[in-house]
Length: 270
Image (cartoon, rainbow, N blue to C red; front, side, top):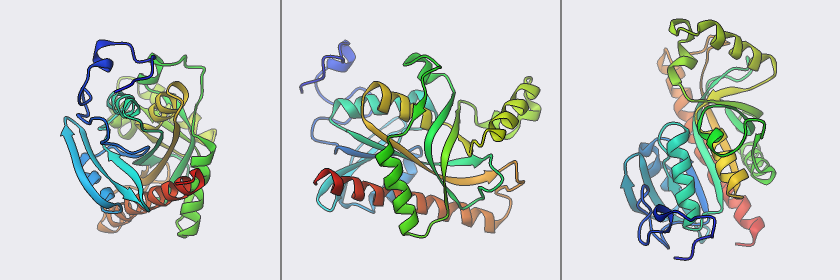
């Protein structure tokens, strides 16, 4: 396997399956969908033709199939930035060129409700992984054509969606229960500040996709998120109705991402 010279370590240049995702040359397509949850990979793969299981290792489960004849891969990243960065690094080593995260989020904007979608145009880098790649002053931004494709896909399907900046953090429970943390005031003030700036939601992987995949590795990146709660508006998964709305939004996010890949591949000439 010929690797870009930027990959210089013994780990990167070792022949055979990649160290963590356990995929090898020919196993992945240029277009990759990135859910966090390994359990969602088979559900996403059902949207592809002739999808086959490639590997499962740690939090990384990978399927590859085709979409209108174009090879497309689905790989789970696990929770948070560190494992997301590993997945992207190793997928790029195998030839992946376009990444779309499919995930869930907690809304911060009062108009973003459970069941809505969020298409991320950028991300607040309130996490640690991307600081190992770029100074904090560098912005985490999506590729404009991926944002356009996701927005077009959601609009065509009639899916209620929002486009804008999201917040990426390292701690799920600090987001949801700041009042029990020793830095309650800091967390509460940060949430209020980001909300006043129009940040749409909070999640745990998008900034890593944008900085590692986009800025550092030069690939095309995007993210579509299903709103699973809104602490600002007092919406929680506390009833069957709300859970059903969240579950439908996850399916809608998958559909929008698959449709976006179809649009991108057509524009790319595949």
